[in-house]
Image (cartoon, rainbow, N blue to C red; front, side, top):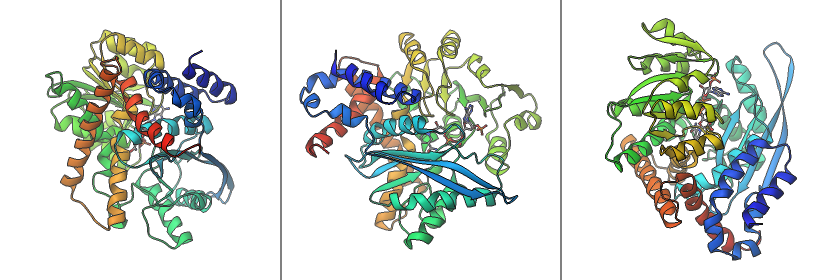
Length: 444
Ligand code: NDP
């Protein structure tokens, strides 16, 4: 049995209740066979076995009191997956679906994503099954303070630097940072995604969405194509989705649909992003409001129907496994030519296979959404250097990083005989640097 297949089989046996972790590991490991074949020393050093086992997984209780005085208890997680190339770095997700399997899938992906940015950051991820939706600001604050009251002992600017993810935006980062500072008495870059008044970086809020579109733009440019005049679908209506829409529209694309977990809006005249921002960023409302406020827009209950709308470019920006084989078939039938993953693992493995065999340019999450963490690393650099760069400066660095990642994964795919397969290319390019660092550091 091939070394890679053996490691995957053992991983499934040892972690039987973790389907999302299995899915991510299968996607990553299967693409690594060509590089593993060139390096027989990896097997002797049990490199893959160590790569798929987190260095540390911290599980903790998060007790807090709601506005009615009722005591509530949530689960807290931080998986410190791999520190071979730098301090652990990766977001915190607050969503009822969060469990160890989801945090481990995200953490494993994060190792390679962070490596792809070319910056010195290792991989980690964390979160809670707490749902900020429908909670008051005071409840969110009390929850965040309780979460940090345990987490503070495991994080630090040189050890582990969390950031946002689903359900964790500027408000939550602010409360988490305030509690860290209060306990530790230090104003350091322990979290990224901070507000601009207390150590944040310009462009961090926009970075994942902008970065995704920069990569799509580069893939199109290499094929003599542009976003100008193209029809685009964007799923989700959170941080990543909103700024992907903003950049796509700035480059001349027409975005016609977005969703939240209740349903999607279709606006054949092009989404009015100022209305979406008002509803989502200011009112924290539901996307169905959009159809009440914009003439000609339609609202449909349920999310899946969005993928039946004809488009040139699809940007899934909400959550894992949004596009399954059925949705992929619909998109292909209706003429999609580019799929860029803004969310983490939004396409199932059979969906990816369908896109690739239909010749759709498929840009996988760990490359396409790396702009967020790359800009977080730029925020860390500014914190350490006590500097503050202009919007244009950070944006230019972000664009250079995203085009660099595109060419890096494209080059790796060519070098290892799988031209155009960016899933394999991104996995190989990201893994090569981590493997090199792990081999150099001995059996740790
Ligand atoms: P947000 O919480 O800001 O937004 C998430 C959006 O996705 C919301 O519109 C939410 O709808 C929707 N959504 C969540 N779960 C589901 C579901 N099960 N079905 C349908 N819609 C759903 O999160 P982000 O925009 O920050 O993150 C989105 C994705 O991007 C995630 O996969 C995240 O891991 C990834 N990512 C984020 C980065 C960042 O910088 N923020 C960096 C790299 C990746 P609702 O409000 O109804 O729940």
